[in-house]
Length: 483
Image 1 (cartoon, rainbow, N blue to C red):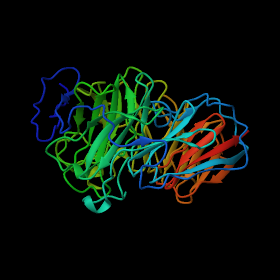
Image 2 (cartoon, one colour):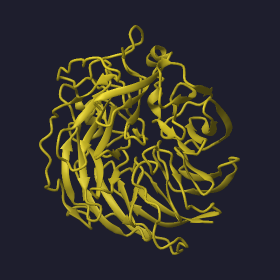
Image 3 (tube, rainbow, N blue to C red):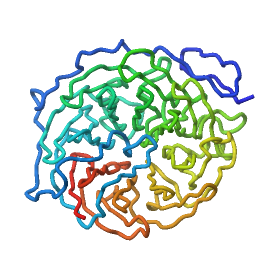
């Protein structure tokens, strides 16, 4: 009989489902939201709203030798739902040149998207911008809400707090999805027209019975199975009455929102910037942070969860045998998101100084991993090229090679930012200095570097053939790749 626990819908009492060969049941729950609306939530135009200053856009005098249009879109965090961040068609870099830099009204925490010939970026001022990929000219800007002021929240390290998680683009509905945070800790999923920035619909994602001001949406969004997946954790400082949960909302904005909540009394945040990963069969893998229990019965936290596409069932999970100690020491497994690599493998790394290899078909419950190596406490998102996995350790970016049953450390370099892979190179930022580096994938030797300005802790670059894009604390920067 599989382990069972109530799926927490906060104030809504959700009973434990009958036992089956699957696992824990999820729930379709009412939220505090109004029905979807097709009325834009804020003015949309190609210039800044009245009373504000339009963001400045500059272009360098040098021109790019890149192709006339991007041949590889970037619709989600690390490009694909497995979160590998591997891009074909990028030249091996021999130089970088700034093509344009566009000012925005707030810090860019999530990765920009590339949709057709536009670069779409969201800010902590609850604004979304679209810039011409080649020139940086402003296509449109939509200001969606007034972000939550830092002093209005019980703790945290982002002020103001607006759009933090990386948006996602859905080709089927031709929509860009973002999650805003506004005054009082209100979290809204917004669907935008990528060609104009017009708001198509909004849905509230808060659940009743908790202090929504203590919940934070930092994880990247994912689109699959006709749904938008959005995961929630807590604020920096782990204050307040929050419990990690993940929602699934139909991409057309109609029908019920479903969710899975971690069955712990408190915490268990799903906060890793890389967000949930989606397997080829549509099922969901998501990492969970430390929870309330520090002994006794396992409480569903500090884990990698495998959930059904509708979030109704926890199909499987992995938690380290030391889960209780990790909960007590704030060494959560969920400081990075799961990375899905070929051969039915999952790589997971967290705060506890280990990189873990798991069997995606049998995570195993509270168990030992298939393999593990030490010396790497990590935050953000990993990347992979085949069996080569790149992990953003706090003491430097590390290459780890994976087989079906082993992990082997190969090299480590100084940059600590979340990496992506393309052109035989691994691209990552030194998030302290704001310098972008490209390293030889095989040896770790430095190839090129370029200063882009102040960035946030979890900033990760975006690659398309000919270009690399970086969101900073004040701008979106486009660099041309010479190769």
